Length: 412
Image (cartoon, rainbow, N blue to C red; front, side):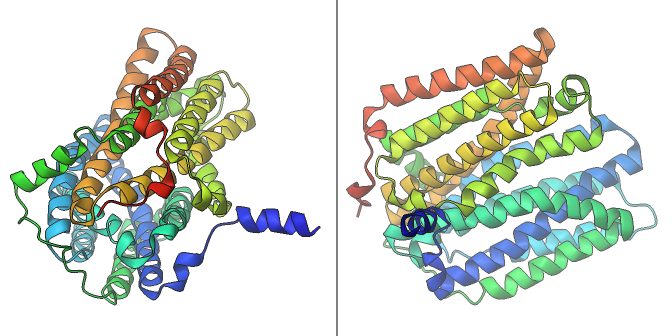
C-alpha cells in the first residue's frame, strides 16, 4: 500500500515551482489570459463566416497568421534579451479593437483579417519574453516541473476554451465573447505587473538584425539544440494530419461536425492528462533519448490512428499522441533552458516558437496534398511512419543530442 502511494506521489504533477511567488503570479496571469484567448479565437472565424458565408475566407485567416508566426518571434526574442521581459498590454488593446468592430452595425471583414494578423504578431512578439522568464523565477532543478505546470493551463484552455467560446457566442453573442476575453487580459495584466523588474542579463546588444543572427549563430554545431528543433520539425511536418480531421470525421468515422471537434480536442486532452501525471519528468536524465522516444511514440500513434474506423479508438490514439507530444515538449523546453546562456535565451525561445508554430502549417500542407494524390488513410499512416523513421535518423546523426544528460548543467 505504501509503495502504491509512493508511486502515485512520484507520478503526479510536480508543484514545487508554486513555492516561488513570482512564478505563481506568472502562472496565474498566463493561465487567465490563455483561457480567455482560446475563448476569443472561436469568435473570429465564426464572425468571418457569418458575415461572408465563405469557407475559403475562413481558411485564409490562417494565411494572415503565418507570416507573423514565422518572422515576429525572432524580433521578439531579440527584444526579450535586451529589455524588461513583460508584455501583455498589446493583446488587451487588440482584443478591445475586436470588440469595437463587433459592436458596429456592420462589422468589417477586412478589420477581422487585419486584427487577426496584428493579434498573432503581438502574441508572437511577447511569447519569447514570457518563455524566457522561467529560469529567472525557479531553480534549474525545477525547469521541467515549471514547463509541465504551464502545460496544464495550456492544454485545459485548448480543450475547454473553444467549447466555452462556442457556448458564449450562442447564448450571449460575439461582442460578449470578445468582452470576456478582454476582461481576462486585464486580470492577467494586473497579476503579471506584480512581477519584479527583469533586467537584461549581462552585456547584451540592442535589438537588431545582428543580434537575431547571433541567436542563429549560437545554434551552429550545437547538437542538443539542433536535435530538439529537428526532431520536433520532423514530427510536425510528417506526423501532423490535423488538416484531414474534417474528412476523417465525416468519411472514415461517419460522424458530423461534433466529431470534428472531438478529433481536434483529443490530442490536447492527452496532453492535459500527461501534465497531471508529469512528476517523473523532473527526474529524466537522458533527455535527448527521451525526446526521440516520445516523438516516435507520437508518430506511431498517428500511424495507427489512420487505420481507425471507430470514434473511440481514434480518440484514444490521438490522446496517446498528445500525451507523447506533451512529454517531448516539456523535455525540449527544459533542454533549451539548460543548454542556452541566459543572455541568449530570449532569442533562442523566439527561434523555437517560430519553428513550433510554423512546422504544423507545413504538416497540414503535406498531409492535404498527399491525401489528394492518394487517400486519407495512406496520407496519415505514411506520415506517422516517416515521422518515426525521421526521428530515429535525426537522433543517430546527432550523437551529442541523443546522449544529452540533464546532469550536464547549464552554460555560463
